[in-house]
Image (tube, rainbow, N blue to C red; front, side, top):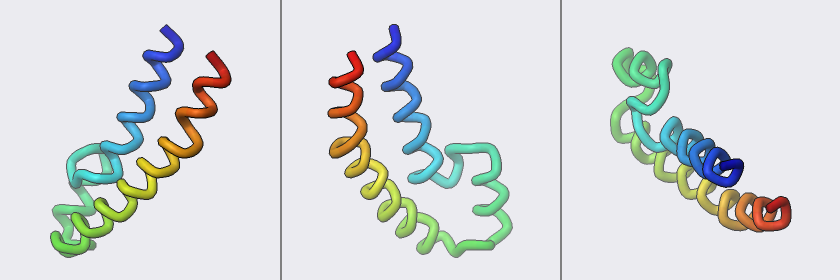
Length: 67
């Protein structure tokens, strides 16, 4: 059960990064025009890749040592 919870938490983190509707405040930033649509998706892709790299290089080896 603990491994399942950790996997669910990691997916929650990436959803707030890559989509403009993934978290509570994201639609407000997206709808207000604070960031242009092109920049929102570009930055989401960049930070999503960073998050995925950190998850694969640090997170999964750490989880395998814990369990």
